Image (tube, rainbow, N blue to C red; front, side):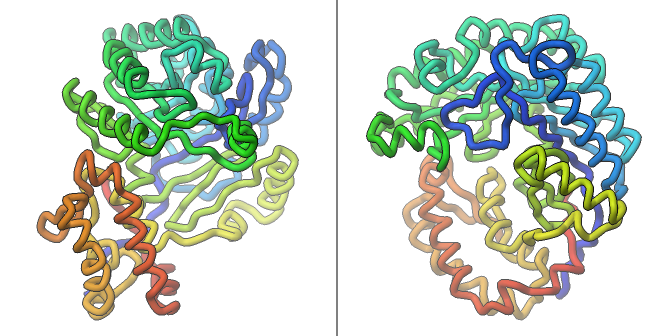
Length: 430
């Protein structure tokens, strides 16, 4: 049996806005700090922003054509440092290049204290219909400790503005980001954070574990023994508390880090998790058209030079996929297991080009490796689909994924790096 997937271009786009007021102590994203008084059109840093937007618009214009977009995500950085006019210009370029479907999800990341009622109305008027709010914490001391520019009152006011906009039908949905296992955090303080988040009436919550990335302020402090992170047992208790508290509040956990009320799932983020392709535009942005992943240069000058090469070669240039890495079965399993619906191993194997014989030969050994996880209750099997259990399986997902990676590394090179994938592309529905 051969795969029935067909090769189609992406229907989603990510735009990276690299500007922030300041770099948070945990952040390793390609961002450009402009200072606490930065703004998009006339304030400090405005010329840098305008210069960058010209490059971003140029990349959109140079890209290969594709079908109309069903999701757009403007992330960063802090896109809300831009003006509504500048955000509108970006969306207009996407409409002219690809088209945007009626009912498309158009998301923009926003930070508290970077917008007010008037600017929010401006963003909504140019087409934004979903907001991802970077709150991270409701505790002023913690916000200062992690390098955030806003404070608790800014966050509460921002939540109120977004709720009011959604109440009147101007905004379809919004999400709040929180980080757990921050320095000095303990179970009771985290319980207070969760309760305050629920009290905002936010319809979607993204709760991320702190990762100490190389090159960050936190990594430097950890190296000096100055980063007091929660002990492993305390971190596990906070993880379980998150699942229990949000479930009791009516949230459904549809991905390891994401919880929502019915009708408020992030359609754009599901594109990443289900193996679909997407366009990525901007400095440091990652794209994955047709399953081939490539990151743009992380610095402004390198990004500019990269665009010059694309300009010389034209929109159909293979340079848009230069040094791209292909999505393989291990990555599809890793991403799929993060989601509530889990994975159908055979279906994913067909996706990368395996035939029936290869599935029968290689998949049973992975299923054998997962027997302990099934016995422990970390993993469950429904029909042909494997799913992490909530909360214990999702809490211990690394135990399951390590077994998968050992299995993947044991496969013959010609199976792992099958050229048949080049002729295939997944077209999962949103």
